[in-house]
Length: 251
Ligand code: MF3
Ligand code: CO
Image 1 (tube, helix red, strand yellow):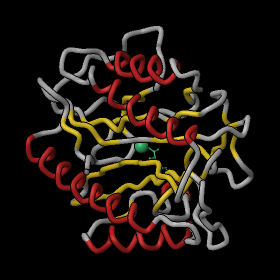
Image 2 (spheres, rainbow, N blue to C red):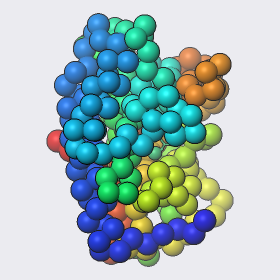
Image 3 (cartoon, helix red, strand yellow):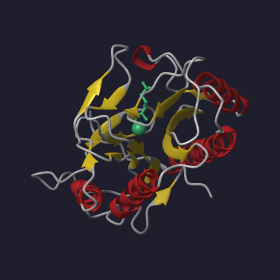
Image 4 (cartoon, protein in one colour):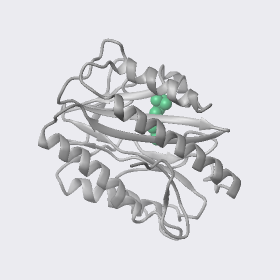
């Protein structure tokens, strides 16, 4: 599939989708506390998404059974919400959500602390977020895609962290996953040339330990093989001739 360049109208709709998703994350962040179940978080998230007349894009995507991916501690991504999974003080929790607004997708993830967490966990969350920002320094028309990948990886690896290799970011638009794939570490080639109007979901997934991951028996939940903590940070990004526009940013 070719990489799509969005028209002005399409960009406007993606901006709207992004704003809505930013609000979903902002609201969801407030409900995180010890004692809440991951199913409760999913339900609250789905209700917020629907309150904006949006469709939760993850629900039933390739059979995924929920609207919000909730991944705790050594879980990297795609954790399945459960009423029996209760957040505990000291956990770190990644929330990944996607919405469809008037046919256009937005996708974003954040990792949060549950109550007080260790200094090591805080650092992992911060570095993962910063690796995204290191990457998007290169997200500009005329640059090459894998400059973003390399910058993300270089930064995260400088802390001794493992940059997950088996999962990647992606183009996004009328579909949740479009070309190109966006790895989070250095590639042999420089990748495609970036053009204004491309919309990309850039999403570093970083393990405190080694980069290897494995899939649990549910065929969804990805965990770090060594059991180390893992963090995820993602925004939907519009490429322009100048600074990139972060469509799902809030704060
Ligand atoms: N943010 C995830 C991604 O970019 C989407 C979750 S996959 C789903 O791949 F199946 F859970 F929807
Ligand atoms: Co994504």
